[in-house]
Amino acid sequence: MTELSPAAVAEPELERADWRWFRLLVAGNGASSFGSYLNMVALQLFVYQTTGSAVAIGLFLVLRMATGFVAGMAGGAVIVRLPRRAVMISCDLVLASVLLVFALSPNHLRLALLPVVAVAGGALSTTSQLLLRATVPDFVGGEHRMRANGLLVTGRAVAMALGFATGGLLVSWVGYTSAFLVNAATFGISALVLATVRLRFPGRVQAPRQESKPGIAARGRLVLAALVAAPSVLAIVVVRSVDTFGSASHQIGIPIYATQLQPGNPASFVGNFWATWAVGLFAAHQLVTRVYKGGPRHDERAFVIGTAVMSAAFIAAFGGLGQPWVLLVALVAGLADGFTEITYTTRVQAEPEPARGLFFGLTAMAENAGLGIGLLIASGLLEVWTPLEVAGLMHGVVVVLAVGYLIRTRYRATGR
Image 1: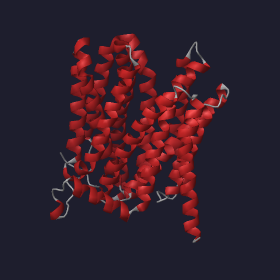
Image 2 (image 1 turned 180 degrees about the horizontal axis):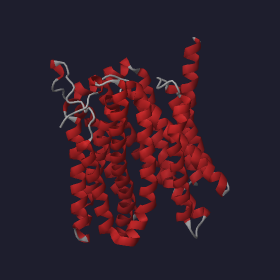
Image 3 (image 1 turned 135 degrees about the vertical axis):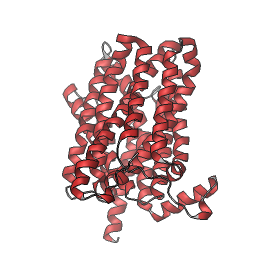
């Protein structure tokens, strides 16, 4: 397959050709993201209706996050040592195959296959997204990475809205088998797009000879050395992990709050909330392009401010506001979530290889660990506390950390 190298063509041709292919890649990634969100809805419904146990759903999610954590741990090595296009295509094809077998199996076998689906989904989806994030600068050039990240977040927002909206409907209309077949097809579409786009996928990153086969301890020292060389990246990784910890409170709390608020029709509240949130996520690209008219910057403060705004908005969502105000808060939360996703990804992409891949792997580990711990704590607290109290505590930790970081950087900048 012929690769189109940005360095080998003139700038006008780069703009015409590479962005066309990159938009196709965004569409393919949107297809797999749609499959992931559809998968989330359909599988959780299947687990609950088959077992009648909320604990079973929790175990399924924990297993998926645990494998995502392991994938993040190994992600840096995968990014450095393996050809990225081939790995991403393989992830999609294996996941499509697992879902195809799952869809065509009878119900009693599906229960036995659930752990396989959880492991495949957590490990392969995490690995594929790590590779995509780390490779964006190679696709479009370092100066265009914020625009590219904005397009990816926009595609994810559309996929999320459609996935959440159609997941339950597909199960109701055509049943689980057809829903899982559609799910498998989305990953097949993503693999086909990855195989056909004419973008420059880097191969193996050359490492020093003595580091050609590092063990776990050596790899840990390599990550530590990279973080010492880039302390600002360590700061946003910490904030990112605490952010996902806080997010667990609203992921579990919103269905509970909706049931308390609208016991006759909680699904309506949940659907409207997340649909409005997705609109904010969709608009985040436009916000970023207006804030950073001159292109991407190394501004960790913008990421931290966006994180604090998002957490504050989710706390306010549980404050007993009227429907229009709750939707406005959801819009702000989605806008801030998309803003932080774009600015965080763009900042980490500024690091050179192989540190870039190591950082994205570390972030995936931190995100999965933070969310997993948060889900365990939030589920226990919600047995005795209200959703507002739990969100106030867990998202409050995020706000306090963010404000502390901003105060510290302000005083450091003034020399005090």
